[in-house]
Length: 405
Image (tube, rainbow, N blue to C red; front, top):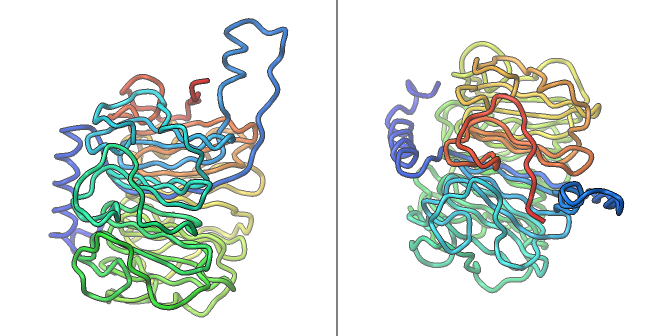
């Protein structure tokens, strides 16, 4: 755990999180991966209940926030549910939702959820954010929270977005990277100033960024050519640079190429390189997938080279393989590892026996994944109704979530 390295930072964050949980049931972090899947055809001979189920939208991508979840259907509709204390569901209220509720009528291509805010890109390339904004993480030029989507600037060239607990980063179609929000640990990658940025700031001058992931106090991204870069806090080695020194601007992680995926948790990071899985940073709950203390440089998890997707949030990690199996490890107090227990895991454990986990994947203190048939399944903490089953009961194994027809 990072208490001995960054105790005041973590304690402050934990206290704030617990207050928010008590007030509206939530926790921290996020990462979204998207896949194109098609819906089945309804059987005309089916009964009314069966037809309704078959008519329900299928899911193309999913993201997990602190205690809320959002998903984009294969038709481009956006749905959110769970805790809504800051308006992070985008429905114009601050009322929690135990089942999915659609966000307006627009169509969307990408969405990511932070602790208490959400950002998404529409099909027209515009970027919109909503929810908590006390650190300027919505990027709308204010620190006013919003319960409905507000546009970030006027650009129509946004390609993807990733929302952390209190900062957000996004990539434009020209390959430039932009970040905004809290910069206390230089997680914006623009130096030590400003302390808070309420509008997007360009990170350097590079035009070859292909992905980005935001942790609590650090950020990592991949450039064309498969190089990996991280910046911000390194209290537990989460930057992977072999030391505990913070970085005010992107610094390359080693010299290797072949990185195809990266995800930033609270104070740890995991990535996939040439099919192999690597993690580094804090390891108090086993979130690195190995035993022992924190690691300041990437350590390979097992010998498999068939990993395809990786997700991390808070202190838990999940990844899927080419055979369609799903594996999770790390903190498991809410059942977010999905193995039917609440035991922390220091090595990847398979989530059930299914071999159809081929779609999007996301995890914080709850996890969600998409299967081959474009069906959505969620598990873990459910204190804010983020599992979408109409209850606030935790689940230690995946349960299917149905979007309303």
